[in-house]
Image 1 (cartoon, rainbow, N blue to C red):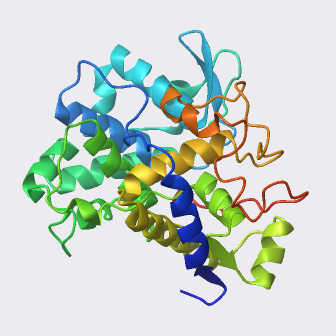
Image 2: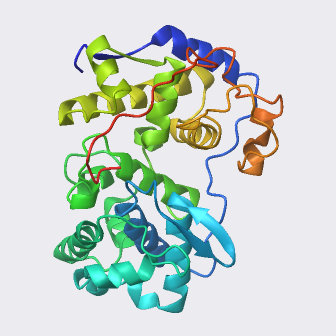
Image 3: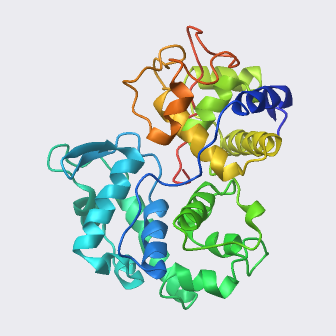
Length: 326
């Protein structure tokens, strides 16, 4: 890793001490999928995660409620799949067009807020072609063929999934996210579960840069402060360091990296906001899953007393990098 980015072990230890004062919920999704077998669940999440990147502007109404980002993406696709199960077939993926994808996620009130429609449609077509080239009709068949092994240069799930363009990220954000979802849905179990790392996204980058568990050099800090794009190598270095920091904190708290990912993701995206973070004003008005609400019962971010940025006038935000990795 370049010297411009490094894990701050002392701050990781400080955050671990904070977390030991809380019960940490299991790493589960807040809503489950009913009425699908393992094969269909695997294809649903494989498709969903493949196009889950840069969703900051995505929003819409599902079942009368307003949702944003991942929440809208997931609930909207689920409603469409329930209406037309063919959407989960690799043969359908191979034929995906930009207009078809646009129609899937277009909202009656907000219109089209899913960006880069053609790019995402291309990723979906690749899913279909690559899955069929491996002679599988579902990703669950790939799991069975791997015998639940994550590691392995060719036969492990991580190596197999990396062959798909949507899952080619060297920091493996989408791969870990998908594999975690399949584990949490109780569809898959892994013989080498410790190989399942944290799927770092932009909320966690922002949060850990602010906490100080990850330190960046002055030149890179200036780039972030000025909202200028970083290079590919800088992006990889930053996200790798955040993943390592989460893994370090996980080892200190005897938790899995995935469980801490869900904790950090929920706290950072609801409390450590890009603008006006709620460091000392995390009140009951904040939307956060009920199982994480005890982290803000004191009316502030659980890390407020330890965080290097809490209460400061200007806080770093996540770096800018044009990619479909996350």
